[in-house]
Amino acid sequence: MSSRLLLAPIALLMLSACNTVPPAPHPLTGSMDPGFGEAVKYDMAIQVIDPDPVYTEEGSQPGDSGAKGAEAVKRYRTDKVKDVDVMETTSGSASGPQ
Image (cartoon, rainbow, N blue to C red; front, side, top):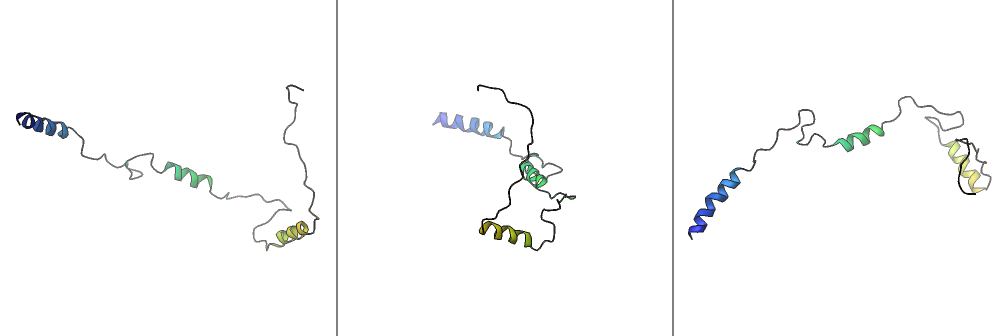
């Protein structure tokens, strides 16, 4: 019984050393963790629409009615698909076993 009486004040003393006050919120984000929400902010930033897009002459334009898409589907269904323009993006040679 005396050991329990001795352990109780020691346990209370040890518990009093624990930090029970939460840290102050970050002044800019209001979060306890300054990195909280960074992934979401990054994802939003990379998905922002280009404010000055460049459209090709033969490509879809803003406000198109879908006529070009309908023609493409029609060519696909009748097996008259346009050939793909092949272009090379690199030059040089590769080395390795031949």
